[in-house]
Each structure stands twice: as structure tokens, then as C-alpha cells.
Figure 1 (cartoon, helix red, strand yellow):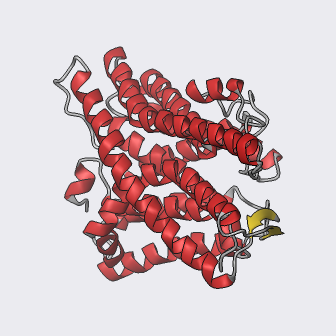
Figure 2: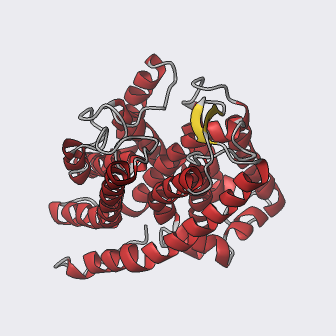
Figure 3: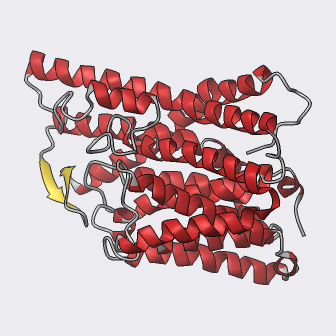
Length: 385
């Protein structure tokens, strides 16, 4: 059984989980001590990026696997995906250029040294790699500018790989996806199961692994009629179990061990929620606030780093909070008294959500709509992705 939203390629419950995952990634980048600082859950929350990859592969395959059968449709697909990702990426890149300029001015005018000196990592070369979306292919030796954009770089080229494979193999997309998952999975296995790569070429391998695992979820979803016939109560229990399994895994997993399990647990969540859309969990994730959270999830992911960095510098400079080494990963944090750190965290989440809503309305949606209007061929109805 499929709901009407699934019929259009739009899954409200999965969108909502994307928003929750985006907040989780943001929490992993908080630069001051909070009640969550020493938890494994926070230390491992960066693996929620792999949930994005798997979900992206599923949604893209759902909408385009049977449509990319000629050069025109393939070119249109690449055009739409580029303008969906790039405008906000470029705006945030410019924001971080301004931050670099502010760091340089503060150091030379007031002697204020930030956590990282201006232009020490964010060099002109790094700017060019970010501008051309190749910052995650080994051209840099660290994450640069808006560090989270590494995944945008790899995901765009994963789109290109998917489009080429879909165009060549047509209806054998499942076999091709299996081959990609197997090949990239071997590399992950040889790397000790690590999915922590962001700036080197293995980051692309990480993305391909999750993305084409999502394509396989789509293939399985097409044969999930029996699962869709589960009673609502059983479907809800199964949904809760898969979500809880990922949460428990993140909360208990030692650093650097068995990270490759995160994409598989993400795939289980996506498969169950997509195949059993009519249960209490899906209903809770399809309320208006949760739909909005999913809508602004990309903005949450892209804008949070600049806001969190700014608040951390505010704590250092204005509140005179010292820096300490803390947390499960021994990161340089700003030390605030216990209540102050949590209060600042709540304020940060609020600011991130407000900024994300604004960036969605002012940047994401206008450019998305423009790209659909500008494409010369308007006979094909754009899919909701």
C-alpha cells in the first residue's frame, strides 16, 4: 500500500528524518561545552551524513530510474540537481570568505587570535576547489571554508554517476548498484570500516557507497508489497525498532569502529518507512512542523557551521570563556559554566532554524523554481525530490 505522497516521489516521514539528522550533524559541530559534549551520541553524529547519502540515492532512483533513457532527460536531471545544490553552497562559501576577512582584521587590529588563523587553511586554492565542487577529491589537506560542503561536492558527482549508469544499463540498475556497493564497500572494509573521510578521494567512495545502497533500497521497495500489508501496529513497531537501532548504534559505538554499519541501518529505516507509510510513526513524522523541518533540512545542514562558529567566538571574546580539550574525540572546546553552555546551545538551535527558514525562502526555493522554468523542455512535469 502506498500513500499519495509516495506516488509523487515525496515521502514526508523520510523528509522529516532528514531534518532531524541535519540537526544531529549540527549538534556534532557545537564548539562549546554542553551536557552532550562527552556523549558517544554526539561524537558519532557525523555518521548521520551517511543517512543523507542513502536517502538521496533512494529518492533519486525513485524519481528518475525509469526516466533517464535519453540525453535530453539526463541533461535536464543534471541541470536540476546542480541548481538545487549549488546556489546555497556558493552563498555560504562567500559567507566564510567574509569570516576569513573578519578573522584577519580582528587579529591585526585588535590582536584577537581565533581558533584558527585567517588564511591558514582557507587559502585561495581551497576557495577555487570549493567553487568548482572538487574540495573532496584530495586537492586540500583538510576541510576548508564551509566544511560540511564536502558532502555536497561528492553527492553532485554521485548524481552524475547515477545518471550515466541509468542511461547505459536502463532497467538493470539494481545489478549496477550492487556492483558499485560491493566495490566501494570493499574499500570501506579495507579502511577498517571507517567512514570518517571528508576531504580526500575516499570521501567520494563513502558517498557512492551510501548513495547506491539507497538505490538498492529503491529496488527492494518495488518488491515490498507484503511488507506494506503489515498491520499498522506491527508497522509502527518495526519503524520504531529500526530508528532505535541507529540511535543506539550511534550512542554506543566506540570511535572509528564499525562505522560502515551506519549506512545499512539507515537503509533499514528508509525501507521500512517507505514500504509502510500508514502507521503511527509515519503520521507523527508527517505533521506540519516535521514537514517544515524536512523542507529546510538542506539549509540547516549548510548554514549551521557559520552560526555555531560565530557563537563560539562570541563566548571566547565577549564572555571571556577559555578553551579546553574535552569530549569523546578530545576536541578544542570553549569552556562555559554548565547552565550557560546549554542555554547557548538552545539559542543556537533557534538561530539555525530561523536562518534556515530564511535561506530556504530566499535562496533554495527561488533558484529551484528558476531552474525548472528556465529549462527549455517544459513538457515533462518536474519530479518532487
